[in-house]
Length: 325
Image 1 (spheres, rainbow, N blue to C red):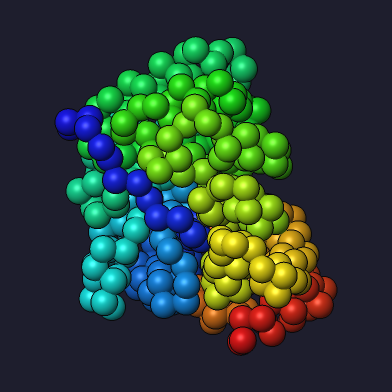
Image 2 (tube, rainbow, N blue to C red):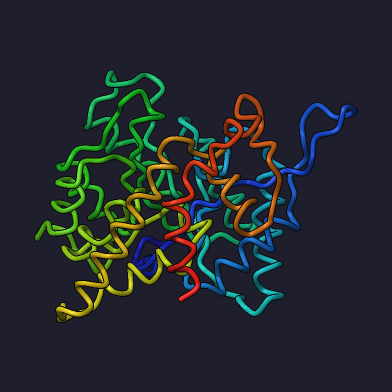
């Protein structure tokens, strides 16, 4: 592609949607993907304030799907959104592979299926043996040839603690086909430093956190938003929090509402942090009546322990109340 000016994703709340599976059958190796439920959930999010989706990221279990399934899911969701009146709705597609050639294959497939951006996980199979210079070169190779703009994806929890350095962000942000980053870690200072770095053109490079716990603090200081799992269950509330945090100037009344919502969101995020994909899917089932309680594909099958959802009734009840406002 011609590397002139790549489209940047919008500011706001993206949801890393889980991949829905049909109920398992004794006659199949594993449960098939459930594109119909995937579309219903995606349309629900689009109608309730969410600015975009991340399909087939870590929460979407891309590594548990075949190439054909990944394409079927993205194209199915694109078709469902278009039929529901959201023809150009933003979709990022996860790329969770260490091979440059395969990363480009995933990106080409994602483009053909209807995604506008690729969210590309840092190559972490060999851990910190991969130095920052090599990580920069790896991303540059991918970005040079990717048919769609990419965002870097820094998730040390699944990459053997490999982390993208501040210096690497500054250099990679200058690439015309790298249009942002997702940081899935608790280092708020890194979020803020990349969001405020005067050497980065922030009109062409968006900073997103993977944690809704950090939403208001980082957006107040220049971040573009979050890619947040709790918003898969309570999209209106998390979107409202972003809307308040992005207002300028910051008025006292809005600040007080923002603080109140951030407290409720942060408390509910503890459930997501504890139970991950299984917890998000259970929340969607309990609140939105979509999906089932069989969890993901092996080794992520099953649900939370009996009574666990009810044990979080105080936090989730507060979220439900805000969702109705």
